[in-house]
Length: 569
Ligand code: HEC
Image 1 (cartoon, protein in one colour):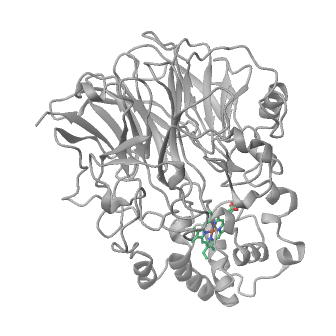
Image 2 (cartoon, rainbow, N blue to C red):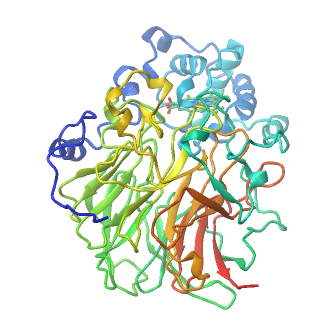
Image 3 (cartoon, rainbow, N blue to C red):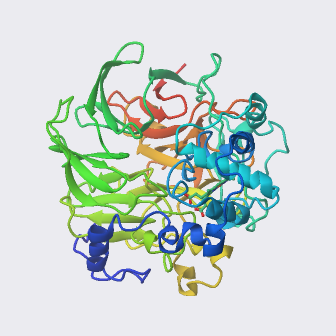
């Protein structure tokens, strides 16, 4: 498929709320920062809490014993999803920050009582009122930096992890106990269960240090080396035209560069290329080809570029802003990539929520889309839409010139809905979010909305295990692996919280059969990051092919980069 035509279309395939790209561009430029993650919170108080509830006084406010009891309850009931210090996990919001810290005690009490069940936040009405106020009292200490620590017993209870046993999953669905290098998988629309066939799980990974005897597992003939470790939240990686490896350390706001590979499989040189970026994730060299002049970086709310020439180990100058992006809040990763001819820039912007209807939530405008721009940031166009979050990875297939993406689908409908996916992307294509999902299935939480879109929903090329949290991928263009791997996709599956028994936490191979076309099959390629007790030590994120044909992937569980080599043994 040609990526052309590159002229701007004057209309979108249908109206989501912003009708024309011109308006879209204005909304984006003028109001990118005007929509907080939760517009309701701004317009009508915290999560639409009624005024009377917001004004209710916390009978335990400031009471140290209550805060201690709240810390113990929080460790057992809330930490799994919101993080042990309330810092947030994945796209589950922080409670140690705004908007929760700015909300009144009464509003927080009201919200946790009711929950937001459709979005994966349980209702806590079953906890005695006194305990709910204890939790609120504790949460309010999190903003101050002077919070009581939970008791050892409460932490131990919270630490027990999910059960390792349980019934085996029903094929084609699987979990970590059955993930094995070389195992093949195929999920079709006909395999999908009904919504709520199982309940919505709260099973955030407990990340533990890698035990001495744990190591990534690969198919026969391959072996794995630890390329680098001690990194700061390593996320996306891309190989520069000269073979240097660029790594985005997202939460540190830094970019590192690695040069050369020693006989032991370590980098010969490592430098910090840039610092003080603002939640960076995406990174691409521009123009495409052998002689780039810039490195473009996808920050959470902007695309910026740094001057670069082959061989640079430090940015030649300060970051220049190219364009504002929607956000902050919700999905924050923004991969950036250029069309092979360098004429267009593509930016994947995930949704701000699990399922907020863009018709009624202006904060979802220009989100859950792949956006197209000129490389100077002008002329925004929505290239494809209804893609809940492709921010973890987009890339052009060097063989066919087609744009592909790796997508995190929605939560809250049960263990085996909705499959994540990897697919080539059609210009103007609609992939369902939030009203529909693959196979013309309507999301029961938005019943009756947009019937005219039912037949437009594209079924993606490769359906993955639901809640895999599929992130960056790379096309294998190296010469080291056997010929059958030429052109195949390798993708990192980060794993997520919304499945009772873990799936993901692996690297997969999507064979393209030397044709550039997927058949829907994929294979487990690197596994072994989940321990028998369900605790997790590694979480793959980024993926790149090194210039020697080895495969590099990042892991923000052990803060490492791993290198897969083919030895033939
Ligand atoms: C199964 C995972 C899960 C558990 C367990 C959980 N939460 Fe949540 N919580 C969420 C999700 C998901 C949201 C976002 C909901 C939304 O945006 O509508 C959320 C939102 C919130 C918010 C609003 C934050 C914001 O920025 O809007 C508060 C406050 C909160 N939770 C408190 C708690 C407390 C207190 C507990 C324990 C009693 C708890 N949560 C347990 C998943 C969870």
